[in-house]
Image (cartoon, rainbow, N blue to C red; front, side):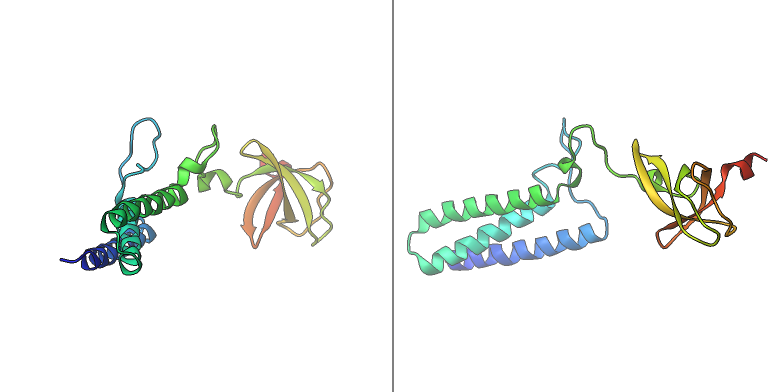
Length: 178
């Protein structure tokens, strides 16, 4: 078997594995393990191995065709493979990119219905205003409309009853306590 055939086989095999890794990831199949101390994806996983084999084969094939130094080709191809695999890991490791103290997002933490806030910009009859509320420890402003179409004064405590097209529909808190 010639080096050109070997590197071509590596390139094609790595490309096939990369396609499987991509399709598996887009369908939420997980082919990677976890390693101690970090709780995230291991740097040696299905995707990085696939990227390594593909980059190794591609770099080796290019070098074989344009150079005659066989041993150098294997070393250089390995370095390119390692660089490609590392790039794949660093680009797609997900939760590892969070800052210390941050946590992965949970959609339930951002549910608008039931949020309690205060009107910061009054709502005219059948008009739009703004409410301020606390979400994930931060003050957030959101456009609001009165659920019944009536006015809401500044400072009124309100509860979000529905959220559509970026607008929160609210009712005064007093209506719920009555």
